Image 1 (cartoon, rainbow, N blue to C red):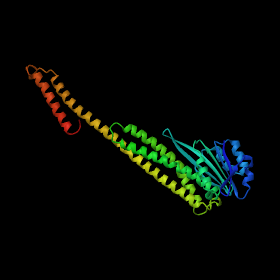
Image 2 (image 1 turned 180 degrees about the vertical axis):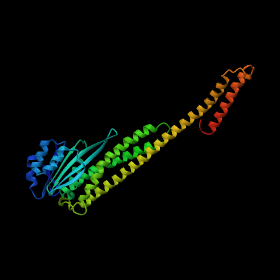
Image 3 (image 1 turned 45 degrees about the horizontal axis):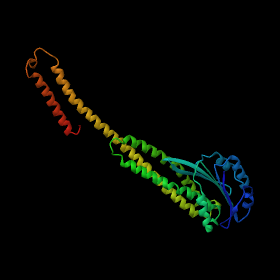
Image 4 (image 1 turned 180 degrees about the horizontal axis):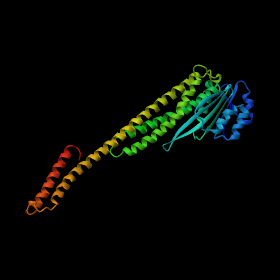
Amino acid sequence: MLINCVAYQDGRKLADIPVEDISDYVARPECFVWVALRDAEQHELLKMQEEFGLHELAVEDASRGHQRPKIEEYGDSLFVVVKMAALELDELVIGEVDIFVGQNYVLSSRQNSEQGFLGVRARAEREPQLLQQGPAFVLYALMDAVVDRYFPIVDAMETELEAIEERIFIRGSQRNNIERLYALKRKVMTLRHAVAPLLDAIGKLHGGRVPAVCQNTQEYFRDVHDHLHRITASLDTIRDTIGTAIQVNLSMVALEEGEVNKRLAAWAAIFAVLTAFAGIWGMNFKNMPELDWRFGYPLALSAMASVSFYLYRRFRRAGWL
């Protein structure tokens, strides 16, 4: 679906143009066209390929979707894949935006995401001195918007991890903690798979050999690279902390099981003594003098109670009961 199709010249908006006129505006030396698509159909991408002269392999990747974050060069043009992320009902939803960049055009096609770039377009139009730098600045603005949306997600993950850590030493909460930690770890790894490849790819846009279209905007992409580095470092820290928290939870489970086993062993020892007394007096041998003694039965019960109380006190002092 077509969202916007706008022509710009000297950093200022010329007009909203029909798709059929794109090639005419692209041919102008001081003009570039910025097109935004959402969940583009195959025929829409083919039409854009015809108007912009896009490389067929890049169009094929965009039509298939589910690409790994990357930056590829096709002659004087770039094909960029960036993953978009959002938290919806505590679930991490990953979308994708495919960006085609040439000397006189920018085409963005987002998939499986409700997050748009209208704010990015408005920001760029408010800064004509930057928009004068052409498609490269638009590419930076789009990537910067996507990367900046990672930060609230990382903050939410850190907050969730802190909440789980506060419950680690609460008795009986270990199972729930481990389930939440594994769910959080899955979200961290999903986001890291979106960030890490892009961190490696964006190094192509600043320092060393840089594509001609991005030659004058290297410092902007270096800023995006720095943001990605910070996000990756935060995700690595969260992942390591989750691993430590899981080990602590498992240790707490083992300690609780040990406490239960000690209690069971203590009570088993007490009842074993009672069983031994009952077994001896229950044999009913004829030559057991206490059988004919008036106080034999009360004395037997008293002895059993005394020994049991003594063992109970000893186990209690030892912390087993």
